[in-house]
Image 1 (tube, rainbow, N blue to C red):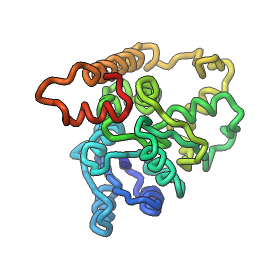
Image 2: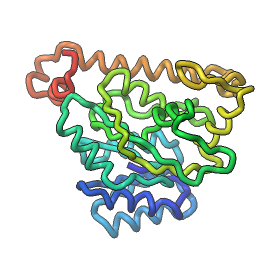
Image 3: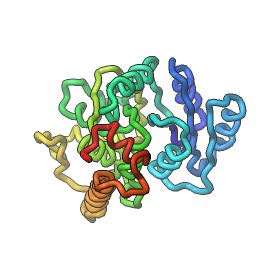
Length: 277
């Protein structure tokens, strides 16, 4: 699914990259209150191709909310995410879906990334310790079983994530890898275009200054906190999301009530994923 907000010029490239995949696809486009004509564009795309679903939201609620709505309406039981200005590369869906079909105990597949249009001065090599964090954090190189995404609670949507430092992707990926088996592959999933004003450029710009950050065994530690970080709201939101995700999965592990035996979808899914019943 693709959350859409005011990027009608680059959106067709993203949609085309999905429609060109070698497996059957459905593209769910959730417009998050665009004012640049993107809303009209996705409606036009849906009219022109039955594989495209256009869902306009009445007002802007944020990327996490748009993703959750998109997953909820998706027909498929395996879902993936793409930003409106990026591309999924040929063969990625076939590779990831094939792996999930072959390994019922695997909940998700995370692929490699390729950067394009990196702003001057922000070039980064794969040997740079910051690359691993950049590869780990996003959702746009993840293919996941829909029920797993929903069981974790989807993307967090509280206001703390609607800040420059609020990265809902990383919070959800942390829960996903903590509770489920995720297959990591070198197969390149996504060509990510680095917007000079986007989250990736902000991360690269902020982490290159050794006076403001340092590399630790756990990743990048920022020595100078922003106002959003100093408030503690984001840290609290992260902790609350992880607690809620763990609680959701505890409920799945609990003895199944009589009315849910033996064919209830939660019980069946948990068994298929090697759940700890």
